Picture: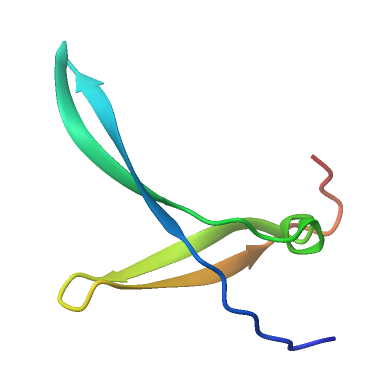
Length: 68
């Protein structure tokens, strides 16, 4: 259904980044999305409210003639 909203669970994943030989903790959010959405979206713009921890994703549509 167009416009259907479904709640999905997103996991916070802890990893490490190495910069100049030193390891630092790093975190990312992993979200599973349906294939039909992934085919239409090139990327997501991420807006983070550091005060509340709210994360908003804005889709950036894939260019018309572009195939991956």
